[in-house]
Image 1 (cartoon, each protein chain N blue to C red):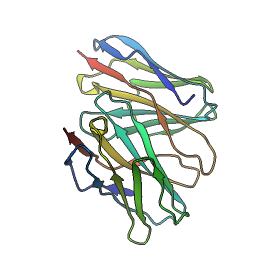
Image 2: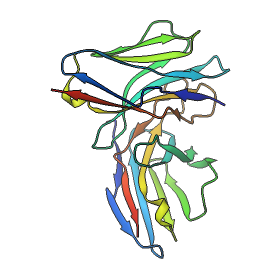
Image 3: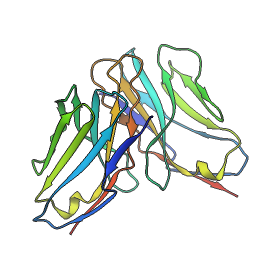
Image 4: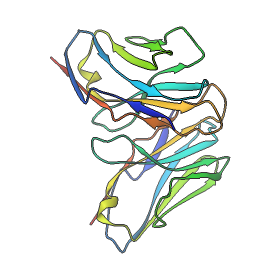
Length: 115
Length: 114
């Protein structure tokens, strides 16, 4: 079974600064996908970024980038130039590349961006 | 269009009521999901439909009954719920295609059982 661990229940950052959210996972599979989802107070779960395990290059989406360390089973999210709208719960998630499309979520990190 | 639409947004029901939650997507996704989410917790998977067939039931009590009438619609029928079933219910969909496994979520239905 896969597990996803987010060790930071809460974090805060000043507007315009950079913050990194940590995520580690455990799996015996070689083919899988990793995601970061954002859930603001409006409660909709929004996909922030995805990473395929077979790709060595770290994914980037505008101000969001990941540091994917496959051997260490680490998948951290870096948010640059933090904005007030980035305030949300962030969930790291794993899905197997096999036929089971079940997402395994971490417990989440509540990020607050302060003005 | 990357939208998953859920109705209603809020629902209050008594323990003897029967109600239904609805979910719709027009992205051509062939997998659809129901998740239950308690406050400050990650979503918990309840059901997965692939190609309109129930493929995963995470041992959900029978008072929750899913239905997938067609590839765009997903319902969750509720009957004789308990107060502890109060939660945010999220619907999601995804493609059944290697390399395109990301799930897209709706805004959820906030359910209160009284």
